[in-house]
Length: 239
Image (cartoon, rainbow, N blue to C red; front, side, top):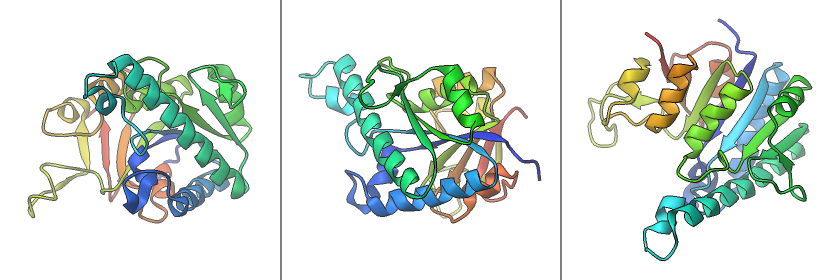
């Protein structure tokens, strides 16, 4: 199995909410911290991006017509900072050295994102959490995760979800839905297959960055994938 030395893991904000559907579940934080610690203990350098959907989504905030899309997206960016701080606390509680870097300046809370500094943190075995998306409205945290993965020269990006990977059709509606273990960037951008948004996938394709979609709640899954075992997940790459 080939070992990926540096990876970026993308978690959705909703995943942190657990069964509540909103807010932050401390049990989920503790579980994720354990999974990340197993990576660091295996000498794998880890970057993390977390969405903000458990608190607020920019698109949803703007639907009522009162809040502009730009302001809604800024609110969403701040939500990711809240999640990043919570994740930092959980990781530090597990004994890891962690830094949060934000695309928006907020020196009293965390560092401002600088590519070289992030890479040095990773080289020193610190986990780096990238917050506030890209710092620009109209871009998702999927795109932010792909961008950061490329900037830190990650070997791959892992999108940790609640399902095993990408299916040929909705597994919640069709019993005969099949898991796609491998698929091309082009197929991933098809309307009926939701891996990441098209901007994120196109960016990954341009930089030959593999995207692995997996079930974050399967114990040890992140470490297996980092070690090159893709048996129970989906990998998007050049075919």
